[in-house]
Image 1 (cartoon, rainbow, N blue to C red):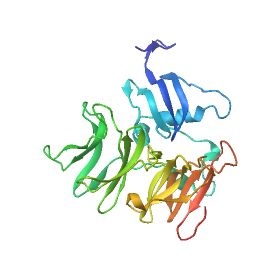
Image 2: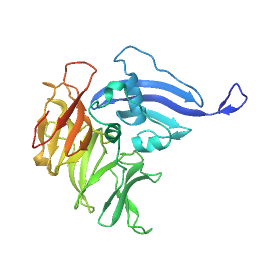
Image 3: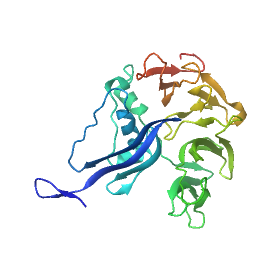
Image 4: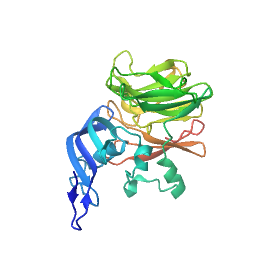
Length: 296
């Protein structure tokens, strides 16, 4: 049901957030928040610095990790949707002034916010995500025929969705992230089977911190990612396509404190991203990296 505006017109519920929970990696910041926005309203979230205002908006928009709760847009559940899909529905996030790259042009800053579509072409087939109403949102493939359209893998039992996101493909493989168990994992597939599943090491405390792909990039023939371990926190790692080839590139904060690098973007063969260096509790620094000219 909508409510009646001052002009006598029936106004609908534009956004409805129910018991939302989320944060960054293993750190849950938002606990059970409810809010709504009706058509034509301006809603302001007010609170002290560091209380989670921006994190709440980022969870709604798909930038921060969504752990639980429901986000509805015009009555449809859009919880866990990709940021580019949400943007087509008019849901957007505008960063603060100090979250842009002052040394880059307007066009290059817009490139920093770009997200690839969650589809990929490999071996003449289209790979995409879909929800058949039985298994939840999982990874599917099609060759353009009804017989050749099917669910490739069901990562979570029953109707529980894994929310896979396809990030990029090479000549032989495509890479996607998805929820596996309680963590976010990185998968590599050759189109016939999953040949790499990077989630847990011997300690059981290593997982990928990238729900929407902002902490994952294919650069200079290797994969750079924001990955969490219990001893290092979220830091910058890379792998060469095998689970044995993963190494830490840089630790921004000592010990288990997290640098949380994300928003990876390649401009002129240089990798740009944001990260915390520990000098401030809230401010992020901008970094540039090249394997040929180390600039972190």
